[in-house]
Each structure stands twice: as structure tokens, then as C-alpha cells.
Length: 56
Image (cartoon, rainbow, N blue to C red; front, side, top):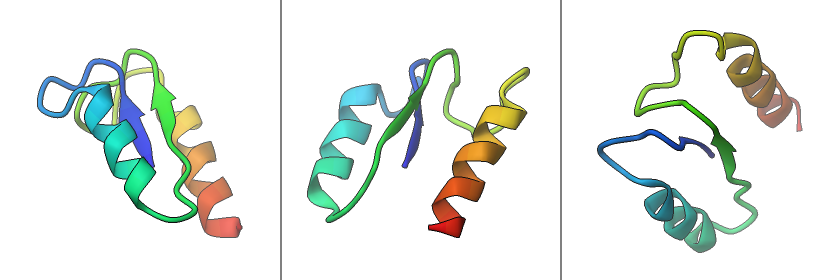
């Protein structure tokens, strides 16, 4: 799971709670990211996380 520290809709504790309830979930908290996956300057980091997840 990818969650941003600046998400105004679902703060980080929501992501933590969801990840805790999904077996084998891994939570990646991205500093400065909001609700969407696309944040300025974070495209490479998000892409790397998605590639790592789908390659596993």
C-alpha cells in the first residue's frame, strides 16, 4: 500500500489500520504526498514502489 503523509481525506492512521487488516500488506508512507499517487517530484519513487510490488 502507498499512503501519503499529506492526505487530507484519509490521514496516515487510516492507511496503517487498513494495512494491519490485510494479510501480507506492506505500507509505504511517502512524505509530502497527498491523496493521489501523482505528486510533483515523487513519480520515480511511486513507480519504483509499484514495480517492486508487481514484480514480487
